[in-house]
Image (cartoon, rainbow, N blue to C red; front, side, top):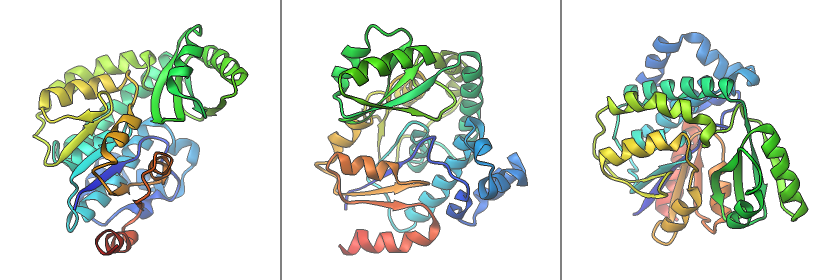
Length: 299
């Protein structure tokens, strides 16, 4: 059976997400690295601290990785992919890196991205109900704004300066598009993150990536990637390049009929539904695994 496992990115975090953790050595490793207070943050918040890039990225990865290991005991994926940060979980799920290597890489990435946000402030906005090519045409006159995420054919995310996003919103609204400002710390997947991209180069080059144990689809090309050199290149470029999630899902939906979103939230399941992928199951905590696997193998 062809099964795709997909992994959420930053923004999926929520207070109480410690319920998604399985009791294993990963939590012990993270506790040693970050202390007991990290797990208190997951369980109790406050939310405005949990959503900080340096904490949310590690938290989402820890929960997602814990769950995917339990799933893989009886259900090994044919394909993995992750949205933005989720791409790192996909790399771990495909056995390209160990848990410890992935955790330390994300820790480095999150720190660099948070520093870039402080040095080069910006934000993001979602645009609903308009084709991405039309969006690109309309926002062309706006300075410091670019497309950051192609989430679905009718859901696109912009990143850029506050003034540029304001100008883009006015132009798009005039053409009937709905724009929604996002509560994020910076202009991710845009040139505003260039310092973070530069900082990651040496770190990623120093890692040894194993050949993926299953098919791996990556954000920058929106297609399957298997060579270690390309995996490194696309991970580095992902920080400043748009996420081509629509391309990934649309290229797979004809051959993959069972999808499992692994990790906090159900955003990817909802996006799949908007692209005509209806058989997507969500695993947000260990107690859901048995029920989901029964649906996967019985229905």
